[in-house]
Picture 1 (tube, rainbow, N blue to C red):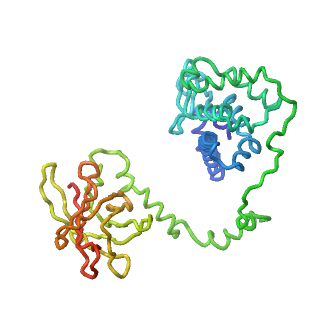
Picture 2 (tube, helix red, strand yellow; picture 1 turned 180 degrees about the vertical axis):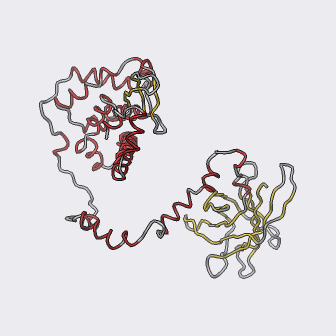
Picture 3 (cartoon, one colour; picture 1 turned 90 degrees about the vertical axis):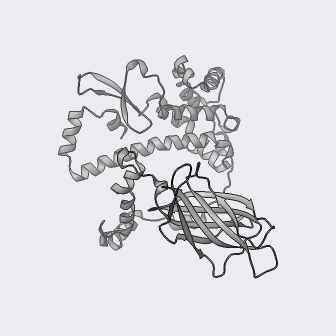
Length: 395
């Protein structure tokens, strides 16, 4: 997989290979490409784990430092980086250097810029920094001659150009200099030999233990997947609708003349929830009664729509004087498009009048939800009922 990435051949050779390959070969090539991209992402996740290793449970720390030895795994990724390659240029016929950049595409770089660190390269260096300079790792990581010699292979890459881009590597260079003078045992098992007790998912272990996965896969194919085509699969159809031309055109700025302002699309649903005993509880679903009324304002015209109240429970919810509300707004075909929050109080004065509160601001949220409360007539306590709701949004 790495060889195919580092030695891709010329554009003409790739085009010829693509034209002549079979369906099985095409699937195999796509699988290799997907595995390579997944491995690049896994490197970023590994760096994230190393950065927060002090917060991880002791079982995870043991796997990072002893079982899988992340520090030793980072050395070949820096020594022989799979995200740097040479290939023959289709234009000049000369050998050129290419690097893998943030958006997972290969770009040609000049030989003088090879020391410029990309995001992929920085992930490995930062992982080494956290694993060598963290007190937790230094206390738990058992050095021996093999580990020492492997780590010292990175010392030659710590030059001024690299240190200017990642100043934190100065500590790594100092650690390497100290390690070169340090005497370590020939072999050392260190913390890995200690007794480690940790929680095991017994239910999962009982399910996956001693399973013949080839037989399980064949049974699933024969009983489930062979009976359905892609056209009959409801889940695939739902996923495909997310990426159809209409929805993708909304999210991507492909053509500014066709770009839609989502906030001006009609509101389809507002889910209102309130905090009860430190938990948010859904109490109302609000749906538009009509298409709304266009009203002029100083900042431009806006549409004010009256919302119909649908109580989640059989009885209308009784609100207290203190309100901690959350409204989840769905617009057009997009569910949970925007969330509005409010922490407020209702007044005890003039209890017979409608009290209005506002969630959101037109300047920031481009959306305003107005809620009207009245004192409940069913009790003498200060409890309130939601009577009316309006949504205002720019046109």
